[in-house]
Length: 316
Image (cartoon, rainbow, N blue to C red):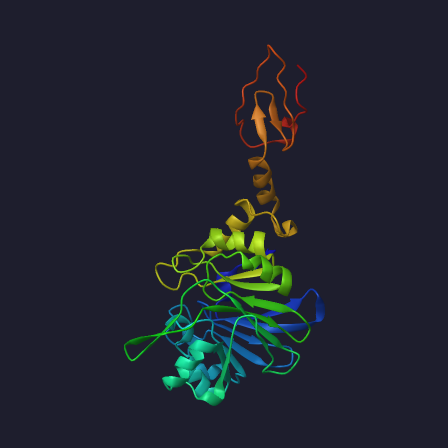
């Protein structure tokens, strides 16, 4: 699992992601802060996920004009909260894009007159749709959160929160977690859908924080690459990409990590945690130290390990 480097610098910037599995093909991914993304596929199809742009405090001013998004073919909504839906009606009206959401939330949007029925795609978890053609498959998957729709001061039920797995033309798969906590079926999503890239909330308070997200990605889902999202937008969302990376590398969530992407310094720190020391030096993980009757040793931490300190267990 690789963490996308220097993520804060990517805000509002188009990412050209070359695909290791298919070097000749690529896509564009643009992040607007919180959970809002614009995905442009190899064949020029445009998907916007959770559009919260104009009033998003983390979206740079030059990107807050919805018209600058250009053509939009499909809008995907993970749940009903304002920081995921604020620009859905305006963007749908401006572009004529279809709007996909959970079936119950779609009924609420239709009954409140927020979207025309002709633009709505209502479906549910585990269902796969192909509104952009057979080459792009979109599957709705589970999320562990809440959902409600607030309109004209009234709060309406918003169905259940969801995430998405988007399979592009060349088979590359992107998972968008929506707002969620950790849940055991993340392992199933990883094993069955095998996402290459995961867009994952890390802010905490309302969703997973860095430690939970690191566990979810490193031990359960195990994607090839992770881009953290949904952090720093509002004061309670205190998780940071730096904490997420630290938890992923040093927090015991080593299973599933691509250690080739971990720095040598981080590897040494990891190894140091696993080493035992006494007055004779340090011993690598797995060393068996035996004290015959009448002998003793003094376990201690002699400081950062040096190769010259690492010894075979003493014969006593």
